[in-house]
Image 1 (cartoon, rainbow, N blue to C red):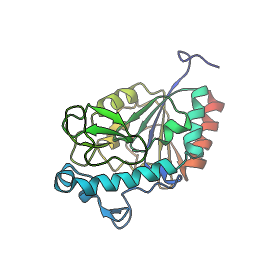
Image 2: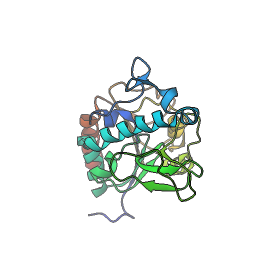
Image 3: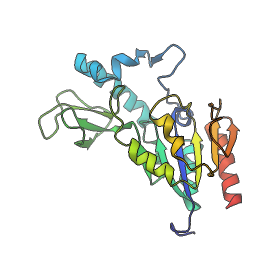
Image 4: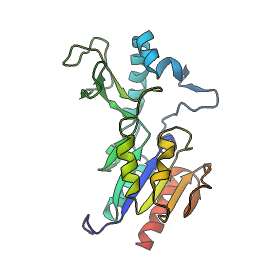
Length: 235
């Protein structure tokens, strides 16, 4: 096995398309709803202030779905690629499927649903036992715990770290994202021009402004496996 110092750095940006094959829906359905709810009623700081019980209940249901889901072949293949590459995963998803698949270096841009955070101080983060975060569960400062999720209108605290990771990429892969949500959509701008950039999606997003693009049209499970074979063959 190659030592970490000898391995090429493979940076992978994943979006909802990779988790969709594990049965997890995205909020970008055709009707603009996420599991029957308008996202502005359940995924903004204003919604939390207006009706925290509704928001808490909504994310408790999403957490149950996440815990019932299992990593698919795409998640597992990315984890296996660590045998050949220094893999750095940046994900827009709030599930823990990359972790459960075995990936060891993951940056969650939008938080992770299996954790909670203080309503008063977002840096106070706690694990959630089971699938339910209850109203009345408090942080050490005495404030209500909320989902550890970046809502619309909130800053993305991990974006600078993610951008730095992208600048160091020697190979780049984009999996299951439409590049429609900012600031995550701008991360490809930080990948060096000469680096090969594999785009895996059922519908390839517009990437004409970038060089060295290799398009792999299809679902994440088959696309990631195809790219993995190419990467391993090319060394």
